[in-house]
Length: 201
Image 1: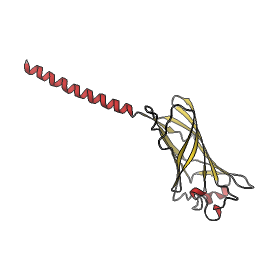
Image 2: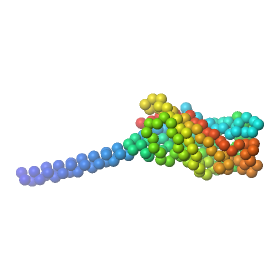
Image 3: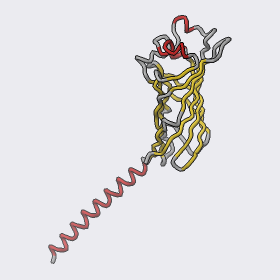
Image 4: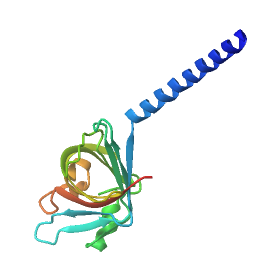
């Protein structure tokens, strides 16, 4: 009888240990709970515009884009987002200059095929408008630039994010040699996005 009681006590101790372990891991996972939102590439658009003196502005869009947003649903502080475009897959109004734009004089798309926006960590608590500095990387160069974000929750599992970003093309050496001059081809490039993201299941 004594052996049976001792054996039952050992079993209870083991179950108690596993219960504590299970509880600890669940609490830990909850404290780092996150939501991941994936870009719908078929609906989303990324457009650019570069002013030209005495002529139509250079306008176009990137056709191949990707990215995600990861939300820290517990602390709301460690949110992050990364988006990219494939530089060589674009359409533009000055189609005859497309090869020039993709050459090493401008984007150097062969050596640097992607342009990336990285928000790093940011705070977010259900705002509909956000302003932050993000890291923009083009041609292997990174600069912090201001970004304006407008959010619209379309459904429980679908959000729309519209952004506007302006950066200096000369800071990224987009246009070297004679094309570095900003008297005709202006310096400021404007990027506008209309992004749709689904919550990952």
